[in-house]
Length: 215
Image (tube, rainbow, N blue to C red; front, side, top):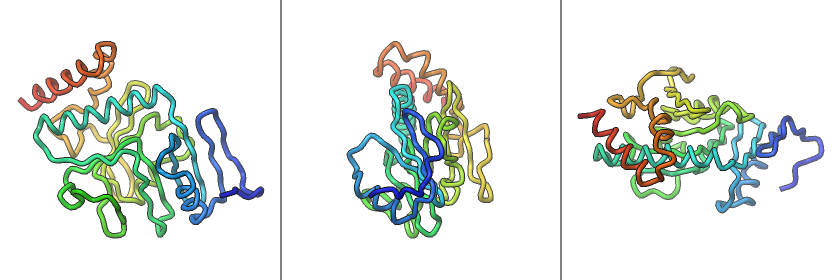
């Protein structure tokens, strides 16, 4: 796909670019052209398109929090499904996004084993993770809201904030609706305290922490 000359770049940095006047058909064509094996991630909101290439720090905390979510679920012996940076989109909503990670918990039985999704029929992920959200040029909240994702975790600069969808908008809350028995906002401190100890020690610490919280 070639972006027409009249389409204007709004912001550009080394790791991201935002374009406007991008049609839904062009967004779909770009997804098809880029394919699944790529480092960049896309977000689309009613004609605005952001293309972002994650940096190493971003990927470390994305992976650490994602693995922590899985370790917590397994410690609690909960069924879950992770779909990573799947492209979630609905043409009728003019909204598309590729989260840093996403999970099904409550709706996991409905989508178990599925490899293709249609958000007009299937439920959206119960949880989406966004890292370094404030430095992303395109506001993700309206996109996720129109897709109907119930809960967002947003990590930025050592802080993890939890947002829940309430009457079409996201409100910050103290406790996760998915893990209400855990102080999820403490995860960044736990990760940082074990960062230099290696991945195995970090995973062990997360599991011990989860057991202690529910014990």
